[in-house]
Image 1 (cartoon, one colour):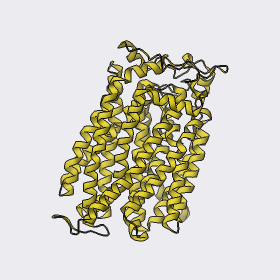
Image 2 (cartoon, rainbow, N blue to C red):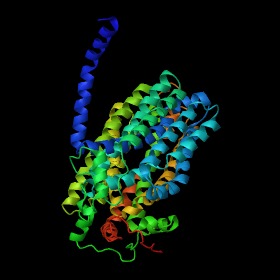
Image 3 (cartoon, rainbow, N blue to C red):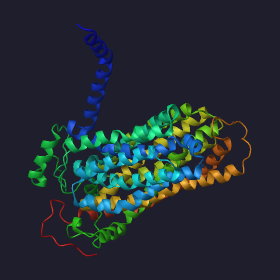
Image 4 (cartoon, rainbow, N blue to C red):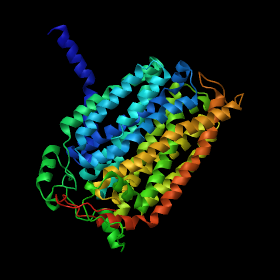
Length: 529
């Protein structure tokens, strides 16, 4: 035995516990999701949202280092996030049209590669303007994520467990945010802020390769929905394409869970909104007009956009606030964000199954009341945390608020699919993403502008805090005021969801009465609205 063989054996012994732990975790994940095939889809779709969220959150993670290196202020930091979101808003409408018309998996894989290129370019930017251009490019090429993930989720998973599955997929978005903060913050502290962009450019290539080679394009209309326990993903999709909808492996009755609950409660479709033709053939303008005529959809778009508005500002300035307000270092601030991620994951994973169970019992409005309560109570929980004088007394409130705010997303996203014919899922999501992206784009600038204005009139540190590192306590106080003022958006999101309780059941019934939910007839005419 040579020295190399001995070293290889010692390495194998050292890594054996990690490999054992990895197998156990993978086994639990597969069992929880419902089989290897379903786990593969959830991991890939969650990975797409994770990568998108990580790349957007990088700016917030390295904001202190960028402010020092580039000599910029909070408003300019916010503008970096703003241009990425505005770029996505401009591109999301065409992206939604493509999602409803062409194969989604190849399009999404190509987009992920372009994301990585745009992110990597940020690492070599020579000026603030170059960095702005790289973030704008990132926003444009990542616009496919929301519409494609929503459409693929609806075609791969039955509605009776839509909230639970959405929770698993959205956990990827939360994990991506955490990854962006933790890894980017670490890279920025050890090397430089440019290293953070390099680190986040690499995973996209592997994700795109995995998506292209292991996840097939599902049939539209429900034939490819995966039954619990499915092992071979490729074979299941092939069998679903070849079988009539009612005989497909993961098929469900014509009326899905929410539609059946609406029927039992006596709710009837709105005849003015029932589609009588293949919605996939609708021109983009007519599709946009139609999705904005559905009352519940408009309310859900407003509520979701308000919630993401607050989260966007929080995501951009959380590290700066914690360091300035409590006088802690980068490591401590990043550790707090790690705890918030845990709370957000718990809320996300718990709310979907809970609201699914309530809908199965006939309480169809659960997917409306759940997010409403989460937004309002979550906003109230954050108030004492924001004004607390010490970090130890604030952490509990932060975790409660984060858990509730993120718990609103799975049932809200499930409700959006419930009220929309499947042939419009991509374009309907693109409309929501456009409005949401504009709200997210405005948030960092608004949060930063308020913080800078307040900090301008706070020449000295408030009692009980001190300057630490490169972030001033005046900045921390400005962000404290900004966060408190912007909490009104969370309360408004909750009130908007409450208003949707009266229209949601009827709109669910309307979606169920749309043009036949099976494969479209090639000779079907397009209904002019």
